[in-house]
Amino acid sequence: MLKREIEDGDVTLADPAFRADVLRGLATRPRAIPARWFYDRRGSELFEAITDLPEYYPTRTETAILREVTPQVAALAGEGRAVVEFGSGSSTKTPILLSAVAPAAYVPIDISGDFLRESSAGLASAFPGLPVLPVEADFLHPIALPAQVAGLPKLGFFPGSTIGNMIPHASVDLLRAMKQSLGEGAMLLIGMDRVKDEDTLVAAYDDAAGVTAGFNLNLLERINRELGATIPIDRFRHRALWNDDRARIEMHLEAQDDLDFTVEGRPFAIRAGETIHTENSHKYGPRDARILLRSGGWTPIAEWTDPAGLFAVILAEAQPMRLAP
Image 1 (tube, rainbow, N blue to C red):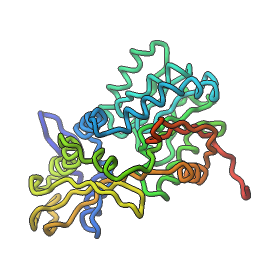
Image 2 (cartoon, helix red, strand yellow):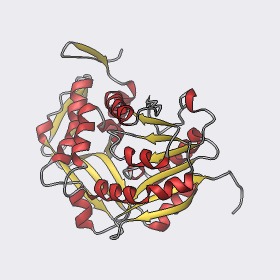
Image 3 (cartoon, helix red, strand yellow):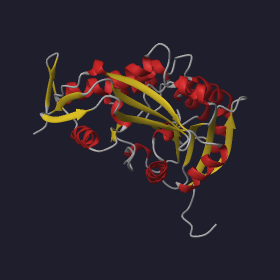
């Protein structure tokens, strides 16, 4: 039976996939819980706060690139496409693209339903006459898009370097799922963070104000709330480190003491210094990014970056299946 949560008079059911991932992740070694479970309502709000931090360069850098290059994107993509945004969140960058490309419809996809509906309502108000068709779903798998956009050419939008949160083979699977969801003739506008110096990278994921720490620890809050867990949250600390061999930032929750707790009555123990691995953020050089896209069935046709080369925005098109170069 699913765990019931009662808060402020509302009764909800814990997501069975969340429950399965948490129980499996705490039982395996090394411990790890998928980053997608950060994004309950509070987690989504905290992430939006992270994007405004002085240390967090990706959002402001990518936004500046988009403001400059979306007219070129529009010229390459043409008018009348349905813009499909994967992991739309608060859709703060979306108006830049929508204003430039004259879309026939906008389809935001996100796993956080409340956040999705609020941001969709705001965009519908900002773009009267544009069909805004939100889809609450996990975009890691192929998605059936609304019937209203059937037959329209698609422009996928995947900003924020979210592709970096997945290990490479999962990133390729995701790109293939996106291609299947968007169909033949589709294009994809994607943001990818670049490899850079370690100090800049670590600071972006371990800010002085502790907002990212709160975002990471909120995962434990969610486990306690939704799965009836007894995790002593104040005995964990946020850690961010650069793994040069894998070209990624890793986020962990590190136990400060030997701890025992339960999740839905199941006992778990973690020793001081052990961690729960919660997120990766892979960084890609220009050649790496192109290889990744081609592996997922997308051919890069244009690429833009900022003057310092911190971040890249790439436009790619769906590539027909072929057996040889």
